[in-house]
Length: 316
Image (cartoon, rainbow, N blue to C red):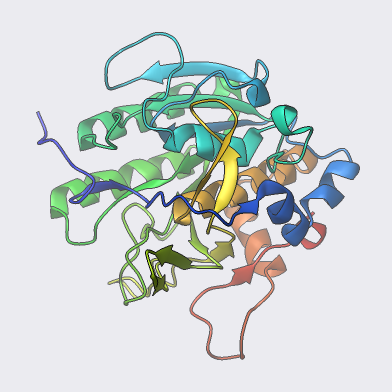
């Protein structure tokens, strides 16, 4: 059996920092032109997004769209989330905003969810559980039409080489089976090679935060988003999205604010659900190419270490 992994060592959750000021999903949608897509009838309907996280609750914003919940930590049968991270991520992807009269609606409010719980209430897990969960997603991809896998957890670059290799292989396998894998870049920036595993995998889509600053007491931590290039000189993250002080679904009901690239990744996962609803025959490689072609570059030419930001009116 593999050794237990804690948040501070290999397998980690991106930081969850509660703030008084927040960036509601209404503002995220406005910034990325998601409401444009929704008015066009693109809501993710018929697309299933798999989420590998701390679980999910049967929040009113998810209607009855949690197609399957599997607990790899305690083998409980019904959906639950004793940490809150997973429900928040799910709300960014698929929340209807029902409890907020649509205000905090997610990016793909009619997509379906396939949820695997791999982390406990403290955000601890082990590599074996994560690998089993990825295989489980692959095995069920056709039955549930799983097109996207969101991974808002990660392993530090300094982790055990075998465990890193196993996790990188697993997400590559999912990608090769037709699943678009979207991973958070982690919150260990701004240094080089600070992107967490599996975000360093060359094939998959890795997402950083476009607004990576977080208040810490009286101070300010700048540049938390993981950055490349990786040890293999791969540009990571490719895409940036809002990640700081995002208000989304709470595991206690209602809504709460969290920050980190864990919040940025589901913004892009939800955006891709809209893309696949419109163009269902796209392969993962074609999805990634479209992101590359439609991303809006930030800053001066020649200074970029990522592709840029994706606006839905351009992507779709």
